[in-house]
Image 1 (cartoon, helix red, strand yellow):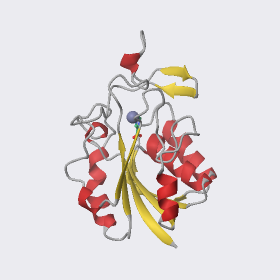
Image 2 (cartoon, protein in one colour; image 1 turned 120 degrees about the vertical axis):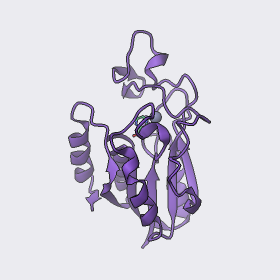
Image 3 (cartoon, helix red, strand yellow; image 1 turned 135 degrees about the vertical axis):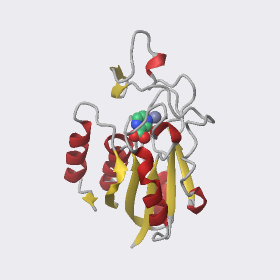
Image 4 (cartoon, helix red, strand yellow; image 1 turned 60 degrees about the horizontal axis):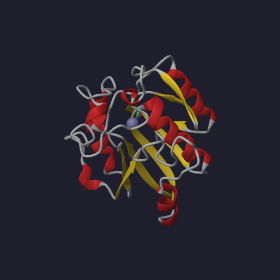
Length: 198
Ligand code: VGL
Ligand code: ZN
C-alpha cells in the first residue's frame, strides 16, 4: 500500500490575522512539518480564487459573509474575500515546510464554482486532476491534515473515501471554522463515509 500525506489549505488567510481565519489554524504547522518525514509522498492543496470569485459575499449585492445562496450546483456559503490568486493571503503559512511537496494542487480557480474538495469542484463533477495523479503513482492510502476540518478537509476526505482510498484524518492536525454546527455534521459525515480518525 502506498501512502501520501495531503496537507489541505495551510494558507495565511485561514490562519489568525487572515481574511477567513480558522481559530488556532497556525498551531498545527509544526506538527504537520514533523509528519512529512514519515510519508513517501507529500501533496499540498492551495485555495486559489480569482478576484471577484462567485463564493465571495462581495460578489453578491445585499449579501454578507456567511450568508447562503443557491448556485446552479446547489447551496453555497458566501465567504469573505480570501485566497485571491497571487495575494499574501493565498500564500502558504511561512512556517510550513513547502520544500517537501511533490505536488501543489490549486483549486477554486473557476470563477463560477467553489471547490472545497481536493478532488472535485463543488458541483461534485468537475475533477481537479488529483485522482489521476494519485492513481498513476499507485497511491491508495491517504492521511489528511490542515484547514478547515468542516469544509475543505471534510469534502476532500469524503470524496477520497468515495473514490476508494483508505483515508485517515489526523484529528490533532486539523482545525475547524464551525458555522451553525458544521463541525459536528462534518465529523459525522466523514465517519459515515468510512474515514478513520487518528
Ligand atoms: C475553505 C471556505 C472557503 C477551506 C476554502 O479551506 O476549508 N473554506 N474556501
Ligand atoms: Zn475558498
